[in-house]
Length: 222
Image 1 (spheres, one colour):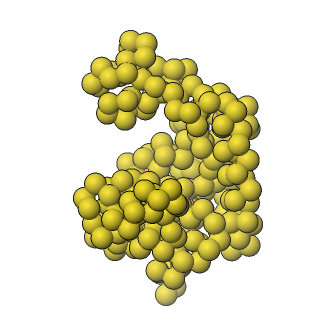
Image 2: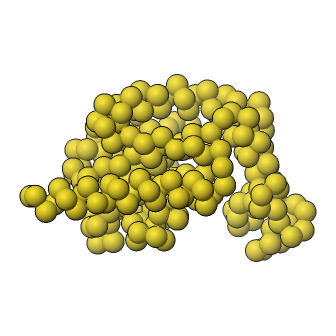
C-alpha cells in the first residue's frame, strides 16, 4: 500500500505521517530528508542533487524519483509506505507509477489560509540542531532557546507572512492538477486540517481502516 500525503506548508502532514508510521508500521518517506541524507553521504545521486542546488537550480524529477525508488525497494517498505508531500505534480505521479503499482490512497489535508499563516509565522527553528518549535502550540521552555541544545531559535525568512502567502499561492497553483488527477482515479480523500492533531488522525484512521479492508478483499479475490 502506498499512502500519499498532500497538503500545503503548515498543514501538519509530516506529523500525521509520523502517526501513521507508528500506528501501521508503514515508514514515512520525505523527499527532503532523502535529499539531505544523500548529500550528506556523498552518494552518486546526492552529488547530482548538490551540484544542481549549488547552481541555484531545482533538483530534477529524475533524481528525486530515483531516490524514492531506492528507498521504497528496501525491506521495511514491502508492506507499505507513506510519501510525505510527494509527488508534487502529475509528471511526478506518472513517474512514481512507473516504479510499481501498489494499492494507493491519497490523503489531502486542507486548512484555511488564515490558520496556515498563523501556524507558519509562529514556527521557530533551532539554528544549531534544526529542532522545530511553534511559539503558540509547542513553545520552548525558555523563549528563543532550544530545549535540546540551547541553540538560538530563529524564524526563517519564508515563514514570514508576506512570503507565506506567496508560497501558498504557488502550492495551490502547482498541486491543483494532481488533485484532479487523483480524484479521477477515485483514490483521493480530503481531510479537514482545521482541528487538533488527534482529531485529524482519527479521520485518517477511519479512511485507512476502510482502505486496508478493501485492499485485503481485493487480495483475497486475486
